Image (cartoon, rainbow, N blue to C red):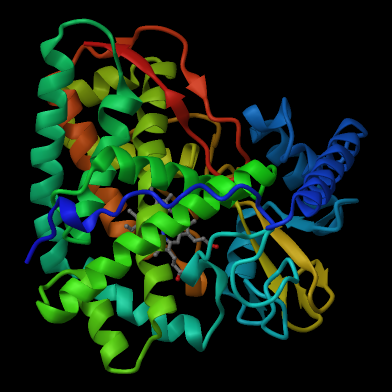
Length: 443
Ligand code: HEM
């Protein structure tokens, strides 16, 4: 069964205020501004954790990660005046992710920003699995798992190959420079997720816009107008998924939305839970994969001989994906909160205190990855990289991300073996997500 254009609802009327009252919007804006300004002052004074959140340091966070690893080796987990601790070495990052005494909520189940259970002004987007702990997390994760079964992955591979072929045909036909991000890396995952959710005729530009808006929520709220933008995108998406769920209830298919609709009918999940889960699948699989492809091409162009090696042997595409995930991961960090007083190695955390878990830093730990700042397609991966996190929240879409990355890089190397930069990339200025917003190349 498939959905047509009629399932895509018109955008909701834009909310005029974020809080509902103009004066509270002003207060919210002032609160966010004060937090940012305070963080910037700390960063200027040398607080390395604060530096990860601010320019210019976050444009190239790798030297800051190296300092954090050294500081951690010298004296235990790094404390910051921001109130957060941080772990930066491979072993400590892995240990924190695997420790069941830490979670993504506070010990009493409240949301980490302390504004209740559901979406709040400081966290307006419900990111489902990413923001819930067991046992609810275990129950809901099970619902999404069938979307990544081997049989489904074989189908996504066909979709990815077909879509990549079409996108490359269009980009290469013009014969001049093109933007690798807007013409390949961004539309590919949107089209694959449309297949995953069985939304074949969806207006993919609008889907992409929603995904971009919601992805930006991973960085935290920037301003009242950002809250309004997020609320609008969430409302639109909820309306779309609400209609899809109704349709699949009446005519179930084999897609993940049908599974979710069945779970509501069977009483294993509430409508709100499945709407948030469907929304997460869009957000989690979109910009992350876009960044993977962008970061891979960028790294190979910046490191002599690497693109030529892939062009000479496109079967190295899977190795290029793994090395990119290690060297420049699309998701740089995550956070956990202690559910009791804990000691993990040198890290001591009091109940309900938070720790930043620096995945990208773990991947450059020289104790685990020799010569870690060198991108090397032929690297023996001595230890697993942590680009997909670990423990209970290990990325559910990892096999799909790998598949899309491999298909995109292989076809690109086959069809455009002389691919080279055609201008300066435009970087995304963000802390959690990392990758170029625009990457001009020419074949
Ligand atoms: C290169 C691409 C990707 C990267 C680097 C990535 C990375 C991550 C990371 C780091 C987490 C865990 C965050 C944490 O521990 O707090 C995560 C979770 C998740 N990812 Fe991915 N992801 C990618 C692609 C995808 C795709 C394609 C999908 C699906 C369409 C997806 C779906 C999810 C879901 C559902 C979760 C939540 C799992 C849970 O909380 O149990 N991801 N991802």
